[in-house]
Amino acid sequence: MTIPRIIIAGTHSGCGKTTVASGIMGALTKNGYTVQPFKVGPDFIDPTHHTRICGRVSRNLDPFMMGEEGCLASFSRASAGADIAVIEGVMGMFDGVDGSDLSSTAHVARILQAPVILVVDAKGMSRSIHALIKGFIAFDPTVRIAGVIVNRTGSKRHRGMMEPSLAIPSFGWIPRNDDIAMKSRHLGLLMAHESGSHDEMGSLIAEHCDLGAIVTAAKNAPALPVLQDATSRIAPRARIGVARDHAFCFYYQDNLDLLCRSGAELVFFSPLQDRLPPVDALYLGGGYPELYLPQLEAAACTGDISRAAGDGLPVFAECGGLMYLTREVTGERSYRMTGILPAVTEMTKQIQALGYVKGTVTGTGSFLPQGRIVAGHEFHYSRLASDKDARFVVSLSRGKGISDGKDGLTAANTLGMYTHSYFSPAFAGDFVDAAVSFSRT
Image (cartoon, rainbow, N blue to C red; front, side, top):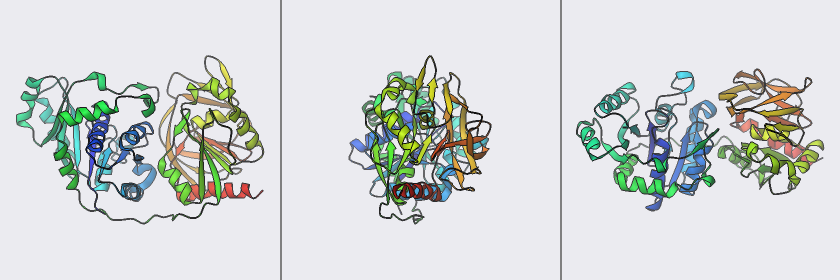
């Protein structure tokens, strides 16, 4: 498989790689290219911007959660029919799990054999930029840095102080423009539907970067092996409802695709606005339920879900979805939720957990069998106070979970986790099997 591809890496978080990557996607799309976007790491928010810009669903590439072959398989599937793939990196180029190389942007660059454009923030330096760039080039010679984009240059004079001595080609010089910087909140950047800066980012790249040189660098990437899917698509055998609206919006597209390939027909609905549709199971992803607590408390769907779960409907929820399954969410005041799980959620001002998660199903009573491996990521500003007799079915070897390395709170046929799971074929199959079993009752 040969597809032109380029990775946009950064020297550090905050150097401007999200703006640059999104701008390159936008400029290429405007010039008639079919762009397949990707994001290194477990992030849910950046891909929403990519998807809106490119008109193709952005995918995550994360070796910790997916494995190296999983990254290649996802890249191959998603890139079909695209003219070029643009991959936004994570953190600094060499920053991986626990200070290692694992799941770093450099790691993914090696897996994809992709050339890299390094985004360098020039604010506050001139000649020192050369030491920085040369250090990145020399640090890992197995990663090919094709060139740099110098961000936040202060003036033509500032550029003139740096340009003559660059060790590698420059694909662009972007002047400082704080008006285009993406706005953030407690879980990261604003979602794509809340931001209006996408057109400006594309125009910024078109004006200040050499788009032709970027495409040429992407075309220099070698052919990749084509991996076969571990799971071939089968005819739908059950309907799984997927909550998708402003409150519940964090999903890995690969998870949704894998459910379909495992025999699920996905039915999307909004707990904020819709009644619960006729389904055989329910998937509640993460998101921002804390921003919509009055609406969720008043929504007819909240009662629908509570009654359906009481009747044995298989329900799987992650993070924000987990919060929605508890009795109430408390902050400045309390709001009643579905009450399916024996716990109360408390919103906090401090982050409660952040990082990769790995665990094993050790308990019984959920649709996941004992021994099933769970891998994913956690990031939340809430905590659960669970009842003393609450049952947890997942033991974590890495991560905090709901309480002291325990995750997977269960009741009836419902399973809630703080972990945002990246599904394995076995995990997806278990969930669809549970839906099939319910449909036959």
